[in-house]
Amino acid sequence: MKKKTYMFFIVILVGAFALVPWIRPAMAAPITIDYVNYTPKMAMPHRGWAPLWVDKVNERAKGELVVKYRGGPEVIASFDQAKAVSKGVVDMAVNPCSFFSRFVEGGDMIRLAQISVEEQRKRGALEWLRELYAKKGLFYVGWTQPINMGYFWIVTRKPVRKKEDFKGLKLGCSPPFLDFFNDLGAVGVRATLKEYYPGVERGVLDGNGHGLDLYAMTGHYEVAPYVIDPPFYASTTVTIMNLKKWQSLPDNLKKIIEDVQLEQERAWPPIFDKVTAAMKKKAMAGGAQFIKLPPADEKWFLDTANKSGWKFDKKRYPPEIYNKFKALYGYQE
Image: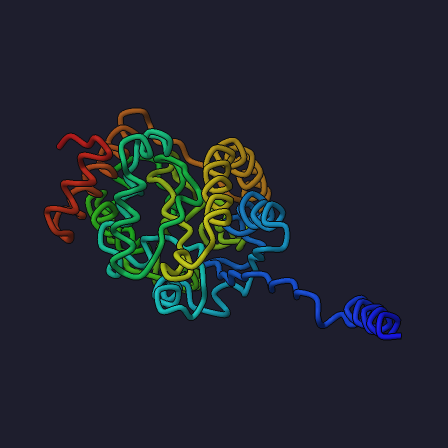
């Protein structure tokens, strides 16, 4: 009798474990990374990057990690995004380091790069940048758009056909371009992206230093139809993450992010070439004219861009930062 009673309770107990789902171990909730971008969602710095980075990370993380888009400058102003990431207001941002050059001193010197991102990694630039960003509570994930000396263009409402035509032009720009524009004989005027179009439209500015994608996507050619060829400087757009958030991630998720970042860097240049061709076509359809400078003036233009950039950084950054970047990028004064 006792044996039958014992077996009865065993059967009941086994059935209870099988029928009550809350006794089973619950699946862990996914880790989320919320991010913002300095441009609207349909602009190339987001539209071109997200499939290469966000979609791949989410796919490979298989639900353990989810990277979520929170919005663009309408959510957090572009110039405030780096500090917001540092404070943990948002986990990650895609943002030009030229927008927060006073916060992370020296980070925007990547605009002067004339060596590939692969060569930069070999020379130790990635490790150095991560040390630099870590001091501000940021983890430097990597370069979002690794394009050397050919990302930015000067766009104007007046045609510029030779170097003398730059004299006196009021050109809107972010701070790292100021010395360059002044050394061309123009007048560099600090301005935000949202001030570019209305500034030219009202005649406060004669033009701007612009990425071709934003120039075409915003219809900026309507007020500044002349695009000066050659382009100059590297893209300064980088991907940054809150340092504590990065440190909290399991090693397997860190590896996924590192692997995808490396793949994205390798994939971007040919994509950029296609996008540039498409943006040129769109801008020209809207009335833009691309003006090629004469060979001697083109050399003068690019030499001025390079020398002015290094001169500007030497003035504003501590010697140890300036000299470190100079060594990493192989610049000879």
